[in-house]
Image 1 (tube, rainbow, N blue to C red):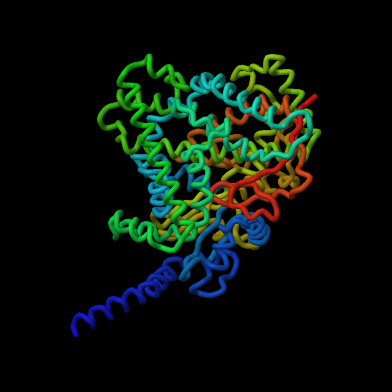
Image 2: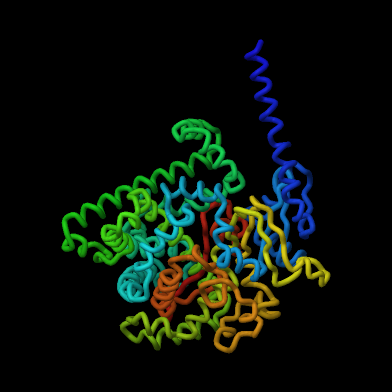
Length: 548
């Protein structure tokens, strides 16, 4: 009888726990109720109607609607009374990203998700001193001098793609999937320059690893709403038990995600062991690799060997960077490039002007140095404007680790009440730093902020751009964010994009698909598709022809 009573008492406690949690959250977050935002349907299922729309595949239009309706600070209802903040106020974001960044770290469930997905404590899943130690070791691999040495590697890979595209297209305009080409290119660029290895993705040789890394983020996005459960599960249940349960759940998306994460982890281990073996043999073996010993992993390996015991990273940390860089680097670059080609197809006058600049700069040989490439004003304008209007990543998540008062550049009410120029954020509050909300803000960029207009970068920007003090590392934009967790590879990514455009634009002409209307899906990285497509894979059909 005692055992039965204990079981019923335990079940009652479990059932009552959400109610207690919700009540405590309501009390703790009462200061946020004055922030405007959409109404939840019910106390229990508010998230199903608000947050799921805000993070779903079709969320881009919904997010823009909320910005238009509620402004730069938006309260979004979550499960059991949770209140989540979406912030596009630059003064508040300066505090979050730079001034008090240790008080606003990535949420535990995000870090745990990335740790499981990328196979260890990599750059995205560590905090504080551990994160700073990793960045310090990696910084030399992203210096300007190292970028200069990457240009021949990037050009070789892009020329290979150019020849393949030329053969596939022939002499007549042909509709092709540009996203497919850009995904293969970005993967080969990051693996050549990142690890001194080639998966021959450009050649169309789809091994398991190439396919797996393409699927990780789209699959993970399908499970996004369940990520908050991860810390509770991994803290209280052994990993092998969780895996046993996951393998037996009737959840195809979860099974596919685990399968592809396993492939990525196995390949990362193989690449790491091969890198150790080559360095043990000596420099002659290393320089025969694709990266000639100048790849990011080799630089990190040598720096780690020469570091003091306190600064040295574990093998698990180093190995985790392989999948981290591969997935993050290839997905963001391929989607940014695809967006540029999409805009160029819609604006033939811009495409012609860019082609003229690149043809003149590269000459008959097609070769160009790093410095000359970076000095091309119209190429820079096209890249900046695309990364402004449509950054590959729209939202970055942060978690308030303590009670905090955020200063605001703009009141979140219609009044001039000075008390509303600051916002008390309770400990535990989840924050979405709204990157696209800042980049498209008409108060910063002017009334044409929603227009794709590269020419805006060829003349002085509005004074409001400098006055906004956007806390980003790149061109008054929030695209690569700022502070200690700013994108470490943003210069690397820009170089990849510019080399690819310099090789492909003079050779090919891009026009919109005659069969499909292009749409863009929200996720960890925004991806293209077309209306009516039933595929979850990114797709960008476009008509391509040879330039006469």
